[in-house]
Image 1 (cartoon, rainbow, N blue to C red):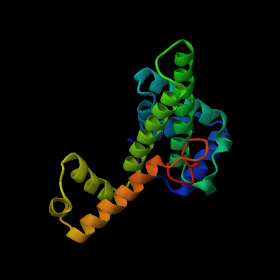
Image 2: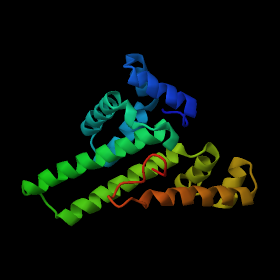
Image 3: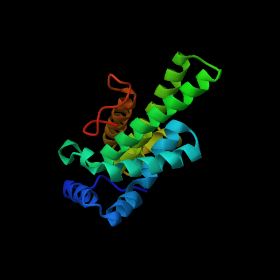
Amino acid sequence: MATNDAPPRWDRRMQQRLAHGEAAALGELYDRFASLVHGLAHRVLGNERAADALTRDVFTHIWEHPDEYEPGQGPMRSWIASLTHRLAVQRLRATETAALARGGEGTTEDLERRVHRAAAAARADYIVQSMPTPLRAALERAYFQRRDYRQTATDLGITEDEARRRLRLGLQLLSTAHHTGPSGVPPEHGGAV
């Protein structure tokens, strides 16, 4: 499982190592972020084999284009998630468009709705994975265990006001999952994914 965002110094150093063609750097990056990439790809594409292929494609792209990452724009983790999301949506559109062309079911509007739903779900997964543990714990209790804010406060050993604050902030972060840019993809790696 990927850890929290790496410090900017690690991000810059990793980019330099990749730019110098250091294969060990790619292995380290893969170890750190492969589960994030695969999870997002699977969430958008809904297929294990397609997610495996996209994971390889993402890391190949990073290896071939390490200069595309700009440390001043945000953490490498966010850039990788944004790249994964963009490539997965492109792959889903291409796959679904080809199916429509072969006489598959649905319309172009149906395709766009499916792509939008899959993309929003992938962004929501990323947002939840990236949340600080206290926010994630409160949301998990409220959603999966159907606990209200009072029960959540008791479970976590915090005040009711703090439980409400955590739930409200967590839900506000999750609400950004449906925000997309003009092209239908989320803001670049400097913003919410």
